[in-house]
Length: 246
Image 1 (cartoon, rainbow, N blue to C red):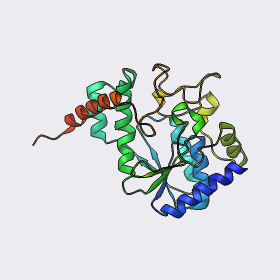
Image 2: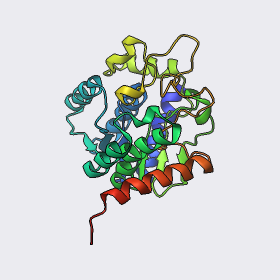
Image 3: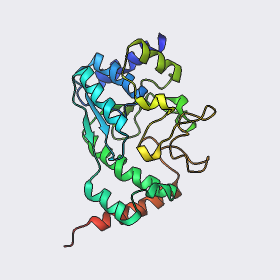
Image 4: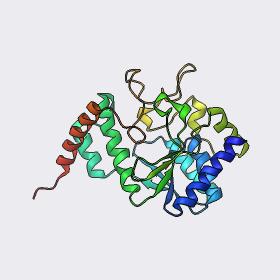
């Protein structure tokens, strides 16, 4: 398959350029397992990292263990700072993400973006399973996104859902069990639901928000200036509440 050859070429190019300063960032959805398979077949010693937000579904923990067994690896967990998560919950409640979009983005900032920033320290590049067909917000993603301090590499950018399914089935890859329950995009447990037949793949993420809200958490999307300023204010409040008195 031409797309597989292209993805392998992208992986090989990234490995050639970044060598050991290269990781796989995985949420263990189908795309991420495909990328993991492509990368570990080409460079078996590549580190695989995942964001353990503290609110992932039990099924995600099971597929992490299954991937670890298949490839003989130990997946590295990136977790939020306990004092930051506790302060956020104390100020806004455990399910703050249901109140406003900025609150939801604050939760993602504490549980995802900040741990990822620490995990990427010193990392030259990282592989993701992003695809352009997943959502309008991803339509223009680049195969090599060099806009950040670590280059984001998306070998499956041009793949369709059918392409991912075909590779998964042909290579007998592990699959997240929530797909069988109608999920098409899988994130934190309280923020994800199954999607309907006429919905796009990411409609099950933060479904209570307005249809116009962009279904991204901040890892792969920079929100508009107004929302960013609101989130920054909320984040400063959380961090200030964790500061130790002098």
